[in-house]
Structure formats: C-alpha cells, structure tokens
Image 1 (cartoon, helix red, strand yellow):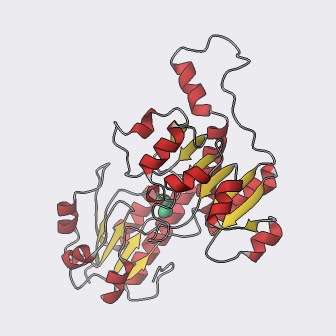
Image 2 (spheres, rainbow, N blue to C red):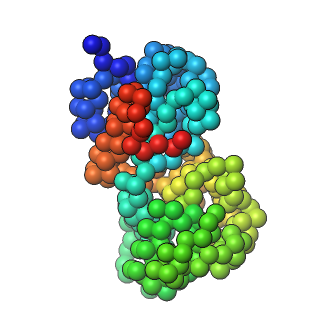
Image 3 (cartoon, helix red, strand yellow):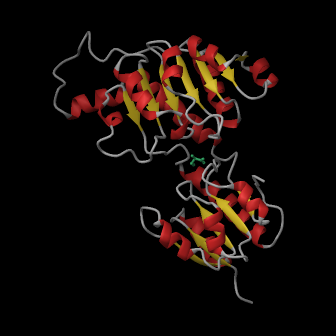
Length: 322
Ligand code: DGY
C-alpha cells in the first residue's frame, strides 16, 4: 500500500526526519528560509498532511491548493496564529500543535532576556569586542537589580506561570498578572495577584508577555501602554512580535518612556536591517529561539509527527487546537 503524502515546510531535527521518512511519502523543504508562497502551494498539492512552521500562512487558499484529500495540518509550534483554524474546521481538517514540551525552554528564554537586559550584557559584550574596554569602570554599564522587584505577566498560561515560578521562587519577586481567567493555584503558590492590564503596566518593574496573539492581544503594547509603564521598566516579549506595536516600542525606548526591552520576537520577523529597533542599545533581540534546545525540539518533533500520523488515520490528535 502506498504511504500517505506529506510535505514538511522546513528541515527539523534528525530524529524527526528519520521518522518522517519511515512513515510517510515525505518531501522536506531543505532551504534555510521558507518556500515562497507559490512554491508552497505547489508543494502541498495532493498531500494528506502538512507539517507547518509559524512562518506559513495557512488559510482558505492553502487548504484549496492542497486538495480534498488533506486530513491534517500539524504545526511545529505551540502558537498557531498563522493558521485559520475555522477554515480548516469547516473542511474537517484536523489542526495540531505542540504544547507543554516547550514551556521550560521558553520561560528560560524570557528570564535570560530579562537578566541580560537588566544587566546590559549585550552592550557590555559589544563594548569589549569594539575595543572600548580600558579598565574597571566605577560608573560604567550600571543596570537594574532583580531581587524583590515587581514583575507583571501578561497571560498566565503554562509558559507565563513557569516564568512566574522562576521570578517568585528564585528572585523573590512580587508577581502581578493579567489573564482572561483567574488562576487560583498560582495565586496561592506564588502569591500572584490578578490585576487589570493598566494596573499591571503601572505597578511593574518588568513586564513580560506570555499570551497568545489574537484579535484582542494584537497590538496591545502600543504607545498608550508604554506610556503607562515606569520609565525604568523592562519589557520582555517571547510570545509574538505582533503583540507589540514595534514603532511605538522603538519610540518608548528612544525617549526613555521605558528603560529597556528584551525580545525573542519582532514584527516583522526578521526585522529589516534598517529597522530602527536594531540601532537601540537598550533593546536586545534574539532570533525567535525560545524553544531552541535539543530536547525541546526533539519533543516537538515527536508530537508534531504523532499529530500527522493520527490525523491522516482520521483519529483524534495527540494535541489538537480544534
Ligand atoms: C511556538 O512554539 O509558538 C514558538 O514561538 C516557536 O517554538
């Protein structure tokens, strides 16, 4: 019997590739950058399953181009704001993602950005590489303490809560959060306090974004939000770049409306080389690597491929978003 046809939009970890090649008639896009839209639509034609990344727009056109045999879209990420889930649902196409396994890695990334921004690590590194370090400096590179500060967490889901644990347990921070629903367990274990978004902005020394990007959260960090924040506040975003309005963030950092930012996500991704955000010494940026550890990416591959296989068989997915 012939194997189901699958297209994988980027090369993933080797264990995943081995499994894909074993279980499916698979084509894997090998380039370092995603296929162009035209090529993508061509490649998915006739596929029973597609393993997608957050870089692919999965919409009506995508689904039409794949054809009626398409059974499953398996996203290699926990976030799936690039997928029109309703359009897939209408056609009975299953949509899967990879929650849970990237929680620690992403929370660690948020914390790494927070410490690095607070202690101005990247500036210091560049200072040395540019040959500027002449001697120990009593007034140079002075940053922020973390111990006992107030952290405001927007979205206390799995990743937000894990980040909160690090802040509370490790650095004795006061945890504020804003979230659609109350989190009584976190309130009890972490003494977390649920507040309105505006109050969180006003009271927090550090603000970290951990919510999904959707119609409600898109652009929520705009000029008005940055204006409410403390002038020495640090803004961390490891969720999606579209949750902040990038020109407003640039302005806030340039004018001293806020103190610094640490971003694992930008809007767009990557930023163009002449984007002002790249000129700011108080903004450090990582190339969307929150989930980039070996065990995390292996675990993501396991779930994404399980989702593909189950969806093609018409069975419930291991992790479904529908
Ligand atoms: C996700 O999973 O949504 C991350 O952004 C990429 O791993």
